[in-house]
Amino acid sequence: MENVSKRYQDVTALERVSLSIDHGEYVSIIGPSGCGKTTLLRCIAGIIEPDEGEISVDGRPLIRVPPEKRNLGYMFQEIALFPHMNTRENAGYGPRVRGYSTQRVRSIANDTLEMVNLVQQSSAYPFELSGGAKQKVALARAIGSAPSLLLLDEPLGSLDTSVRVNLRLELRRLVKELGLTAVHVTHDQEEAMSISDRLVIMRDGRIIEVGKPHELYLNPKEVFTANFLGEANFLMATVISVGSNDMTLDIQGERIEIPVRTIPKEVVVAIRPQFVRIARSGPKILGGWEGRIVDKKFLGDSVRFELDFKNGLRMMAQIPLNVQYVDVNVGEKISANFQRDKILTFARSTQGLEKELSTG
Image (cartoon, rainbow, N blue to C red):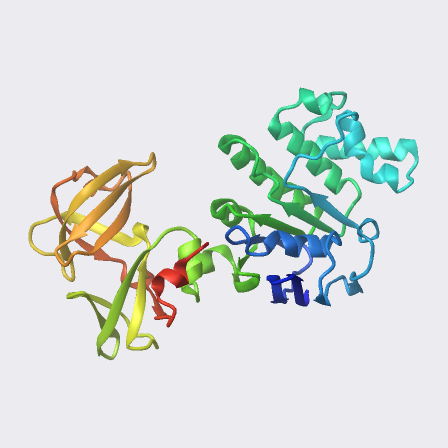
């Protein structure tokens, strides 16, 4: 995609979007509602024609090529199965409209249903299937035409959490086994990070950042990405000294030392809750902040704490359940410090932090 734009009267849905996806990649496009991710997917599919820009697959330009001639598989957000067709007929729809022989259509349908473990339900109609089974049929139909590119628009959004978690792993496995290239649109950050080779972060019709999931989580270049992927404590800070290896930041009277990096004097600091460490207050931890616990929640594999510090700052900490100091309770005084190499810093925006973090 090169400089793809789409406008609806006064609303810019896409603004000069450029993106290159390699053969065999599983790429997820994520961002808040209304950011343009589904519009971009529909432009690739040919459902929407962009106002400007070029889209090509394997060097073949797609602009003004009808959707049915683009050789793309599309799995919709809605489970759009044909209600009058059984599972095998739905799975064989693509090959059938291409004019394949009855025997070949049946063979392809059986093969794709075997991939998604639904051969035994090949005679069932959509109303007889669970939500997860319906989505598997939709996936079988999408891959049945051997597409050069598989487009997935919120394919798991309507499913229960447990079904969604299992099916997303199955989805990635099938895409990789078949050697397909996939573009997956979702608003679910956990889903995107667990199945993707790369993530594309969108906001207000533009691509903000592109990278591997762990890179964008641990070392994002944009403060919006740090906020959208996971959770972080955001604090205003000022650089007060720079040494040969370390630099010191002041945050409302509290100090943090971080490895030396090139940053402006006034910055935004982001600290993910997983990288906050706490201990019962006693001999002060080197560089520790004194405070107390004001809330505690058990999350299964971890415990989440809300911390209130003497300077009025509040932060969240999330501690693995097997760590000894999760037994501290609400009201207790604690000392907190942070994994220095995991502290993120960003230049302060002239728009203000609230505007910069906004997903609305």
